[in-house]
Image (cartoon, helix red, strand yellow):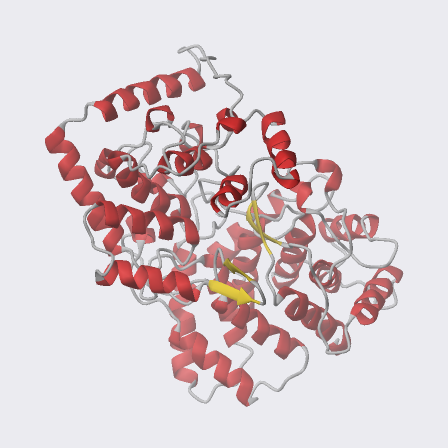
Length: 533
């Protein structure tokens, strides 16, 4: 629908062959009436959908304390920043009519179904109707105060590069919100936001696109680990230069995470160039591992940064002993029931891959006997699937989760002949492709028949090989040999690998990422570990 509307804006006529095919698909899926909330918001912005027909979004939620049910802090950081900005936008109900309508995409059907108020869904529907009624006739003094507080919240979270969280959705809606609050286009905050969007726009040949996010810290620490795994000396100038850059990127200020961990001192690293409000556990764990692989001339500086990162990561352990990506105990079950929340993951509960990286880092830091590492290991072992694999939240999918879990178990001293490692190795063996490689399709998140199945890719084959290495399989093992051979034969003349597939995960089932360095850093790490053993 959004692409169809964009093409209409570009001048494509609705009776063009490709537009007719798109319209048939849209109508077959239920038409505009069955679109997700964010599509309806975009249509409302252009006068093609009524703001009255959107789920309630009231800026007054900014007054809910962090401990209250349905507080904005119950949302994961990516949802939180988007929701606060959208409450401002929805309060103003802007509409900029287009020179055409999209009547051809409507079926005329409306969803009249309402659940019983005695059910959870019915209660949320009732609350939504009350919220919509309030939005039509808000208490003006309260609405004025709420909009002012929400505006301050948004302004305080703009990053140095002009972004909000270094990701596209809150960025776009925050700019809209500030514009609606009276900020002129040449205001420094608006100007910085627009300039920042330009820096996320990629121009190539005759087309361009806006990147959803950028991952320089993640890419750099993984590249540093890969080079060390491949035998580059620890004192090599390239490794020291990369370490210096990572040290400069350490986050030293408090973000939203401090609301649930008020006594915890800042530390750690974010994913992006600029995202001081939201450092994350995954990057922090991998950066610490990377820094330990460098023979840096300023050892005291490295040790101090690592100590702060370790302390922060330990403090961010959730109460169930796992680790989420950005927040501790961000596990609300209520927030996903809101009629507004139909757009993917809205919370940030602990995941096997992030927990594995945290546990591995703690073990490599000599903290395997610490309570955080031991309880984290127990959590990770409890998450092993019945088939022997682990689910991958931030990479596709069970190949990624298993490739993260086994090195963590091995670092914690779990022996290669442990039945849990053997079960994982057996799962890998059962899912190796005929060509020797490994692959898993993004559809595995919504269709279990795709778990462990897909075209062989360089990154996924590397994850499997790193898992095999951690499981202490013999290098002469047929599975190992075939996977190594696949990587060797698939390598291009320039030393890289082709990988058009998307093997990074944003929201399972909704949004995936093609990390351009995954096809290089993970194969180099895997090959280096097997060659160097």
